[in-house]
Length: 259
Length: 320
Ligand SMILES: Cc1cc2nc3c(=O)[nH]c(=O)nc-3n(C[C@H](O)[C@H](O)[C@H](O)COP(=O)(O)OP(=O)(O)OC[C@H]3O[C@@H](n4cnc5c(N)ncnc54)[C@H](O)[C@@H]3O)c2cc1C
Image 1 (cartoon, rainbow over the protein chains, first blue to last red):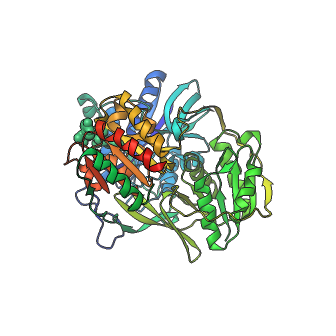
Image 2 (cartoon, helix red, strand yellow):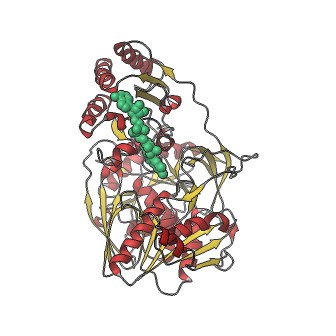
């Protein structure tokens, strides 16, 4: 079986975001980078499928500047993936270009794809679009926001969560992109021997040029960054509980006008 | 230069988010095509005419009863191509967020989801979108995009007063066959018949301060009075007191209600990431130093087990 996991490196959730001087992007100085939290579920699910299937190879793939992204690839290898591919680029990317690069990088590998796992979205640009673009570029099925997954003999069942806890149950025969949600599994921690082994696992490098992708084909760019407007200071409601709730309801009604 | 507006409907009514986008498209003066899937679509299309749509592509057929990304994407792409539209607007719902990136792949174009601001300027859509969990925002600029696709969060744009129904040319969406063997076997309805968190206008949310699962009953009572949806912090979802689908935050749902009432929630940065876009935030917490207060409009320092029931009574009295 041939399994791919696509991951991204994003700023840690605790990171304070500052803008650069001309508001064309964020100031990356001092940012701690982590594997996108949803991608951990993707890596874990691939490992569990491999455990069941026995004969399977898992390749982790990422697109971005090598110096920043390589740590997350090593983490995935330490968790148990077999090898890694990085499309090393400093170019501005959007979901379209990223998915093009991932699709071409995957097509360049040896055997045809059986499964591709991704996270449901990356917590930096919050796009949630790469998985679907990628499925389209590979001409295979897809399911996003997947919180339950089973695979047997070339047929998969995936449950996708939508509004109000409703679940759509898909059956796909043949390859598919599965975008993992929280709750799909509990990602393992990399063990010490795993970390040691990961250092020796193969990490292949590709460029956008190798894949025939022109960075100027980008479809969406972010411009004119801004920080959120300062909220007026909080009004603390004083007095006995009865007074507090009374004045709250009055203020919500007359001042904030939200009732 | 025309617009396609993806119109979602429920119980024979256009959803509010779709009405917001039809209303927006109408302000541009360009022609509007409504795109609808599911049983009853041709009928609901008439409602779209009240906001200025003159053409509709309606997918009434059985194939469109249950959402299936590959079937919907191929059929939607064909309809959008036929419409000749340069712009597509949709609410950033679970269906639209899944569907339109695939459609964008087929149409070789760009898409931006979860946008919060939208203007039409110089023949281009300019949308703003929160990034890094709402810690900043940026404008989305389209290039190389034959169809500019913007998915807007609900509750961001005004709904115009509905006019009278006018003539609308309703065309059936053809089911486009695909090679991909994907079926939607089943839709398991969620337990909640409430408005989803992401669309809710009022949210009452509970954290670890609720002490145990049973106490969420108290928040249900408050929510019933306000017509609100109940949410939760991750601590509570991880403890299994409530399902994960109720979690608000960076790894849960991003919400933007008019009123968000946080009960026994400390206000961790990952929680704030999901709800700081709320118009008015009320925090009830016994710890005067809880970080949630700094992000709130109104705060009550106190024991929520005392405050919440009294608040429920007060709202009841005020709203009757
Ligand atoms: C990668 C990552 C992602 C995360 N994603 C999310 C996310 O999406 N959403 C999320 O919510 N969290 C998320 N978290 C977790 C987050 O860091 C916090 O741990 C969590 O939000 C805390 O939940 P809480 O406020 O309910 O609990 P606590 O922080 O324990 O706060 C409980 C509060 O209740 C108050 N309290 C207790 N008893 C009472 C009482 N009787 N009356 C009034 N007040 C009372 C206390 O004063 C306290 O402020 C994430 C963390 C990480 C590392």
